Image (cartoon, rainbow, N blue to C red; front, side):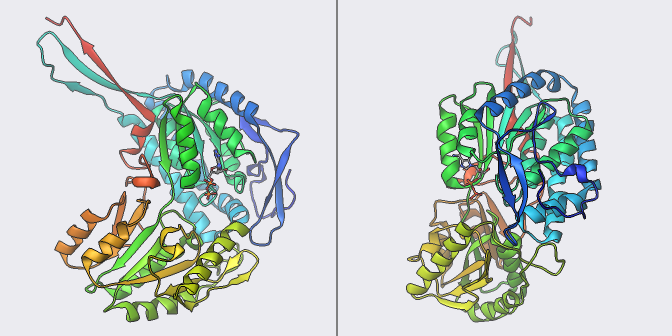
Length: 487
Ligand code: ADP
């Protein structure tokens, strides 16, 4: 049921509050509230699925797998293409829904919808390029062939920070490979997920191929996904804490798993860097989505020789940030997602200040779920903020003297997702890029996420890659066929 929703949504049938299981919209007696983080107002009550609904969805997906995986790649590709086109046709409505439930500025929401859709287009193309191999044998009697087959039913669990793109980034390659999916979106942002399901139903996916189950009981649905023998693969994006639970649960049946977890991205500026470019790159990387992305800059390491110039220019930009309602075109940063997120950052700021760091800009709660965009300088590795994922609009600035020292500091974390650095000497660039223990390195850029590149981490940031030519492999099994008696 929708409690409050803007009439600005042109296609009102995109506003779904029921679960999408086996091609049908299912309403349950229990429901949960979704609210707008901007003003805390309730916007919808959404069906609350339980473990038995997840079980139904898995069985539907298993039945659909036998149909979908037998479609030709061309046929799957055409259906994915029509889903992609429908999403682009409805970008304004989808972005509006996303901003109202998640808070991000409308321009960023439109960007997310297009970015998310790009995964569907990309994997619609890749569906047709799942090549096998013919391998020269060791004996004249034998021939060796290799084929790739879809793994089966995929369980996907997604977070609130990219309510649309984190779903398409997982399920587009799964569907392209011939898998079927059951999805549990974040309880904070189920409406964007359900709007995608509505468009998928119009695109012509057979019933049961895509199932989306909103729920307040994530642990129960997680257990039913990871313990069900028909689910062959789990793809999870979220915190490292929950990722570890999913991995442990999946171990019992040795399920394939992809984990996109937290990050603690360093952003290093060397003395020969283009400072203006570095300031712009850092600003983009730190404050996108209000700092609430796993690839956001977390620790800014400035060489002492350029520290003051960088901080002065950076502070000028950060002081001019406009926060507010994401639906207002002038807003650059919306609210944070919940009270817990705001208080965690306030505690990190307080701890850093108590240990000697200095606030240069911001540092306080503005009101409700709004934290002032903040820069803190003189931060060091004894402070909690060094090892915590900030996930908010707080920029922590460190200083360094030598390349060796900064590499050691940058790698001194359990995380290994994104990293960034600015410099011009090409030998230094190679050395540093190779030494950083991260799945992704941005060199003279603060923004690097694109469908064409493999997104993913190492260490406790997880494993597996999303996007690029590698992304579809997460949803395929390799089968080797040995042909004997060929003489
Ligand atoms: P975030 O910090 O992004 O909210 P979480 O890891 O808490 O990260 O949440 C990511 C997703 O994992 C959400 O869909 C959430 O509902 C789900 N989730 C949370 N706890 C569990 C759990 N124990 N088992 C399965 N899923 C969970």
